[in-house]
Length: 415
Ligand SMILES: [Zn+2]
Image 1: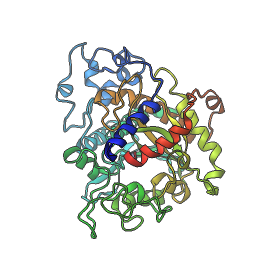
Image 2: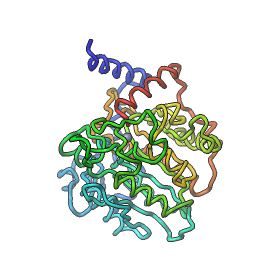
Image 3: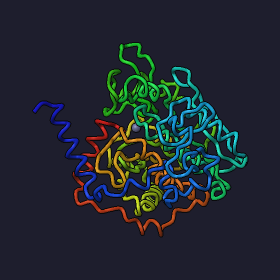
Image 4: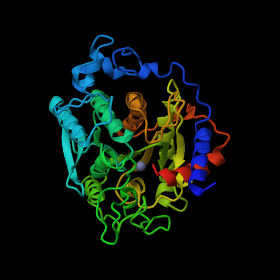
């Protein structure tokens, strides 16, 4: 068996092991059909309440009828987005501006420009009090993880809808930190991960932005080869996208209570916690409490299984990544890597990066449930031990194997 075939088989075994225990696919998909058939489903609480503001035109119609926007796959230049397809960068921008137009206390921010000069945009939800702590969510650092930007948009609309629950918290969300890589993945190379910068020493393009932060940057686990998917760049913060994020953290020094970086498709919540890293060790209780509390809200009815633990234990040494950097050096009180799943609910198939679009809304819904836990912490400064002890994360008898395999897969598909 050649190496590629061996890896393919191994990955399939891994996925089968990792997602073992899911109920078979029966009626599980019915509740995510949003073409007017199942709008009363309680797992989609926002759809009927906020349909006018948030562009769920299809939901308003009579069963069996789709809106003009939905028939056109929701593509429009007026900011309408239906969460039934993966949006382009231009659609994402238009959607952000539309939300800002519609809602008081919501504004579009630009933290910088990408290598190809696209604006790196975000949404700020604020009451204007600059003393507020910040819940900061950064998404779309890797081009091929299409589920991530759309889930970030879902979180934005949900946080706007739930604004009253977080009155003294500023919520800032960047849906696409790497717009060049995202568009390149959409138009040219579906599995493109890096940004699109030129390398002076090689014809290979792009830097893995999530290896370009100034934290353990010269670690041996990082790639110095420009053609590699995890190429860490010619220097720490060599890329405009990582520079933009660094500048954002500096402007908001000591205000960021939580930094969440969203990826896919591993299905995990991780946090800094390397052995010998005293800063991470001193916060391990609150980091663990928040991560466990977040997954505890997923027990019913979604059945999505998330792995929880320190980055170093789950995927090996973190070097040059945004989550480690932000908490150790970037002034964020806590940080988390939220890896969205490549298989969830009652799916029979492991989709990885290629999750069908009909899962955007259910995954957006459950992800927002988790993000609400972090929002409550930003608002109150407390992590509920009750939800922590009630965590029903499934014990997995193959944890040792899974750790090993997760490490392996994450280095292959590096989420
Ligand atoms: Zn990623």
